[in-house]
Amino acid sequence: MQTSQVDQLPGDLDAIVVTADLQGRETFESSRGHPPRLLGEVVPEELENEILPELGIDPQRCGAILAGDFYTVPTLDRRGGTGDVTAVWQAFGRCFRWVTGVAGNHDTFASDLEHVSQMGRNIHFLDDQEVVLSELTIAGIGGIVGDPRRNQRKSDQHFRDCLQRRIHDELDILILHDGPGVPEQGLKGSPLIRMIVDVLPPPLIIRGHCHWETPLVDLPCGTQVLNVDSRIVILLRSP
Image (cartoon, rainbow, N blue to C red; front, side, top):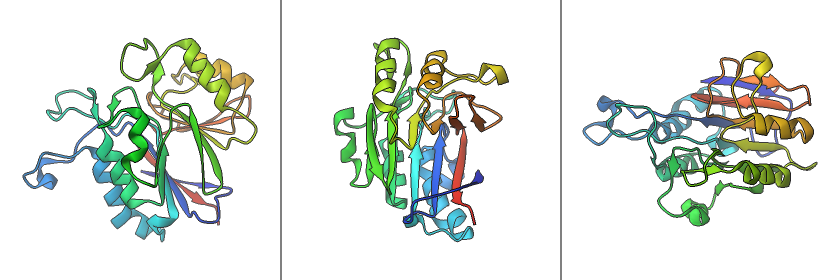
């Protein structure tokens, strides 16, 4: 868990919670005899009841951005697997003003993706779409570059087309599951996405998928990349 200050937030927000790749489950002790829930189902409750109140933040003045991969197999004998993360999104939706984000390559949903928005009135699932929330224009592209016959993958050309559609002058935040690599700093990512971002730079990319020890990087093109793989970052308004 990390907090970070930002220069500006919309007037109806005091914070934005950003996270991805919480691929785990609660402990057997805390599950109290029930099947252990996905970690992403537990985290919103802890944020709402403990962490945000300690920071003096009303959860209803807090948005949440999810950058994908919240599933872990029930046996916990390996990380990931592929499964339904609807309950994770709904848990965030119960706790926060709004939730938006994308699917990771390990994620499926109880309904098909065209109807994922029915998870809740304040839940905004994005895949080659954008939404305006609290005066922020946010776009999202789910999955990763790869064989489109596999779960949550898009061909090179499909991903390229999505990026070129969604990056524009009014965009504030671009949410991706994978994102641009920064090989000059030894940070993994997609060369294809980096190539396009270098030409069409959005102000801020939020991504997961590959863990970086350094969570925030400034690209030469001016784009900031926030990597929240296996971490939770609370963005707070600067005093």
